[in-house]
Length: 293
Length: 236
Image (cartoon, rainbow over all chains, first blue to last red; front, side, top):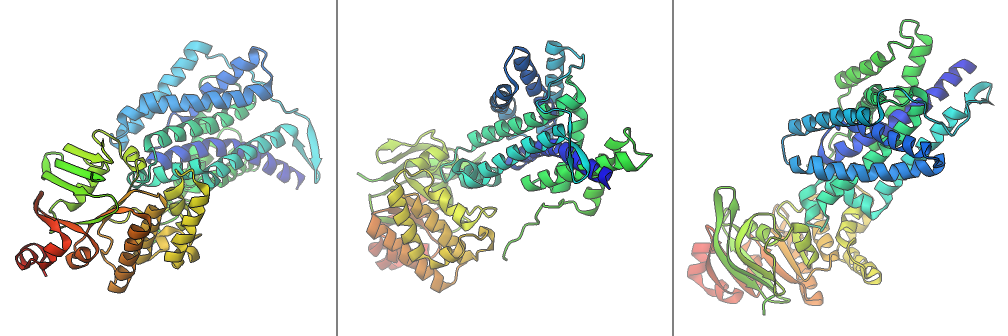
């Protein structure tokens, strides 16, 4: 029983990491109907920025928000320079552009930082605390707390601020929004910045576990895809719930299904993607369009 | 000087040209109707004004040319455009739609007063504030679109067929409120309508478009009284 609880809590922690990256995917999908295959590499690069800052002696809790700001600016820059010229191109063109961007960023990171895995500091101790008989690490609790704060902040920004409202408006109905004075193109850029910052959180949180190297996010992004698809690719809340479900499921499968172990965990994520697409293509929170006729 | 002036405006979609030189003007605080059959270019005229379609010639608003301006900047000059299909953001709530009308304004106290007036004109919007705009009926959506345009505190409203698909009683109510907004706030209106009789009743001047050109124009009472014009262009 305690072990089950332990596995679930640690699954929630990894789920929070997936949720952040999944939310980043959803933010961009909502804004332009595009799955951003470069999201993971953007997060990886941001994590290298954090690594560099920390190595230069900047304290973790200053480097963390600073990295989010850098990631935010980087996201806006990428939208302006790489995405905007092809904004009106067919979706397949855009997908190929993001794939190219992923390769480019990956190579760039390898060129600058090399491919040697580096240990990344965690601000949370690896010691455990006893919760209802389960031994839970401060590391897991810290990751859960950080991602929760970030996700709530994004929710508040989108749902309860004017800028969030105009971002949602621009994403859903660009033409109508322009007629209300919304600068749609800038809202898209803002969406990219925001997604980039949220994605960076997942990179920084996962780096102490996976070790930092240019390919670090390549499995994480698959889990994030699974989470986003499970939640219904359009729903920010769905991405979060999906992330937690995927995190817990994968963790439990790894612990209790002997044939899964550590090697087939990624296959579980892929199985989730396929199952959702077959059984419930709209995902858990993807709403069918309700409208009065 | 007129608030809005179009001078020899030509516009179209790609190789298809729709407007072949339209000139018209809307005086400050007046209602002007733009009439004509389907495909005459009424909607394209409105879309040219707010930069939704490429145009040549000149369009001036309050003395300033709108040439090469983006839609969002034209709108910020004080033009509220309720487009064909009403432009409701159906993924958002009624309240959020209204807020998108007023979010650029800095006169907080006046905004609150305007909200009170909106809910006085359209009590049903107050009841539905928290609901998704997609659940509104056609008439309610038209009310929402008009309310949102009003909250933008424009100097000019462009209304594209506000009567389309609505029951006569609701059309009456909506036109009554358009008139109120016009007289009480001095908002000028360029009104595109299929229902010529109703439009001529409301407006001071009218233009009749025929395949992308102004075929007839004059004061509304003149056009109403002219049997030949009425029969050949207005169809009643």
